[in-house]
Image (tube, rainbow, N blue to C red):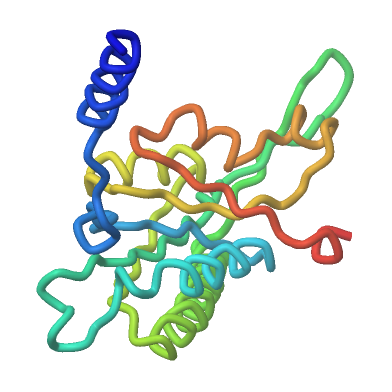
Length: 201
């Protein structure tokens, strides 16, 4: 009899010590307020943007009711810097000759870069506006991986999203990978979106 009472007391205390569970209504919501997606000319970067639109659109809506509470999506494109000169081997002993670009060539290259950036960002904005997502765009110039990391630090970003080009091990070792660099140097969480296998072929 005493053993039964002790067992019952233990069961009661075990039930009382169970942690309280929260219902779905009480569960905390995801509070990501600022996301950045870095894009370039590759299909994989636009696949990453579409992935964000499909999976995070509820956090980034522009409806009047949601605007005060919703986050902001920033689409970044980094233009490669244009070297005004190039060095070529000019003879034995490692001598080199420098060829400088004319001002008209520099202007035409810069204009082509601006047109490319405008076309890429226009495509990205159309994708976002189709889902009524609060979006801003930003064009930077420099080394893409470094500029992306600097930008997310200055902007206090909650999440950085980049696409993966699916470079092989050898290409990644020689060329480097923007996604790998950002994964190690960005000061915010990073999401690397891998494209479907058929896209990387």
